Amino acid sequence: MAGRQFHPGCCLFGLVTVLGFLLIWVAPCLADTKTLFYSWPSNVGPLNPHLYSPNQMFAQAMIYEPLVRYGEGGRIMPWLAESWDISKDGKEYVFKLRQGVLFSDGTPFSAQAVKKNFDAIMANAKRHEWLNIAREIHETFALDDRTFKLVLKNSYYPTLQDLTLIRPFRFLSPSAFPEGGNTAEGIRKPVGTGPWLFSESKLAEYDVFVRNDRYWGPRPKEERIVVKVIPDPNGRAIAFETGLVDLIFGPGGQIGVDTFKRFSDSGKYETRVSQPLATRALAVNSNRGPTKELAVRRAIQHAFNKEAMIRGIFMNTEKRADTLFSAEMPFCDVGLKPHAYSTQQAESILDEAGWKRPAGRVARVKTGMELALDLCFVGNDALEKSIAEAFQSEMNKVGMRVNLVGEERDTLLKRQTTGEFGLIFNDTWGAPYDPHAVMSSMRAPSHADYQAQAGLPMKSEIDAKIDEVLGSVDENRRKDLYRYLLTTLHEQAVYLPLSFITNVIVHRGNLQNVNFGWTRYEIPFEGMEKR
Image (tube, rainbow, N blue to C red; front, side, top):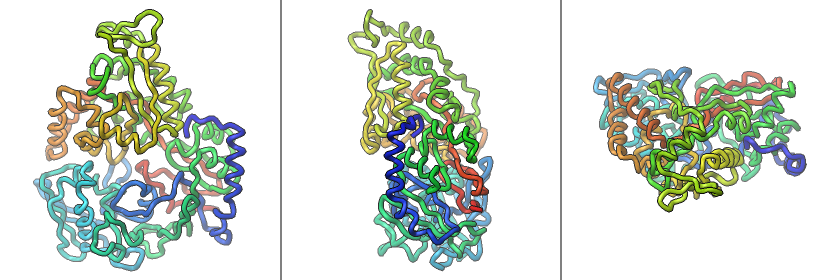
């Protein structure tokens, strides 16, 4: 993970582990020179296009495709649909499908197949209610083999953006549906229209994808992708250096930031950092403990030294974030003033609010209550742990005692649902989710956003404005509504933006055409070629 030191003892253990599995990993591909070796912390899962974890998003995107695709600068590009028409009231979408597309099993892609997938998704609609389009779909029609009609209950301006997402609105071959058609119960096998086929898997060792020779678009340069399961970032770095992995691609946690810098400085490899993709942030609970007070939440904003974090933990591979969403995201450039780093200002705010620091004590006290906060994070995530420790140190300086609560990921997810946290890591999702899908999830009690905002006096108004902005057909009105929402959340200090998340690439010179995708979740393997 980012921030983890590259200890020689750890390296030795990792090297022994990697070499021990060498034959297992490489045996399937020894005779194949057209194989690209990648790695991931876990197996890719059953690859059900309509479900979430343990399905890994980059792998789902290799197999399944959308009607429309997110492109450069947020442009919506034709994909499985060549064109579309939208009714004036914004409630009806008619898609003309691309001709000659086949699922990888040879089944024709058709409007009937699209409807079958939509019906299966909506049969499990409650699972997808975090995404507003799942609440708005009224009915669907296959008007003919190439024409699909989507009817909404209300106008919903981000409909096309939601249809670009990797899940759930992508398409499984009708032949791969389970008996009874309920994909929430599982699928026969992962069969889509995408450039790759899922070939084989070995638990905790590897997954193999092969080129789809029926693919309607430009076919991948490589014949196979072998995804090796390497849970540890140090092990992944060793696998790359010893030639067992061709490519490191993904979020900073793929390898430590110190390791990435070492690779960059060596001059032996091609290394790149992406443009900002999403916002790394903490949600601050307005409904529990001392952070119920706006003064405490405001003091937190001024007390954390983000620049020191960027230098010390990220080694300048990420940039400071001062707002929940980048101003480059749609409707998000609203001129918000950053909360400047100033321990003096933080202490002044706390003093004025009646939080006094008794002599000889770290934590301030008010009416018998200690100014103590719980910061919850994934215990085995070295990056989150490093940030949490830096936060703890900075808050101590102004009289806040921070208890670090490191737990299993599933336990953290429960805390998000129940609101049992003082602060919790809560990143945005990046394009094409930001800001509309994140805003939509703010109304769902199962999300940390909802719980963090639950104590705000204007929470009901925030939810009502979100409802309105998602349904507005007037772009100027949408701008006004987003300005209200973003300004209110910023002023109420229920989020502490930390940095803008990036992806990294490391590869050798013999691997060409390695590029970032337009979102943080996809890896464009199909253009890559080993020479």
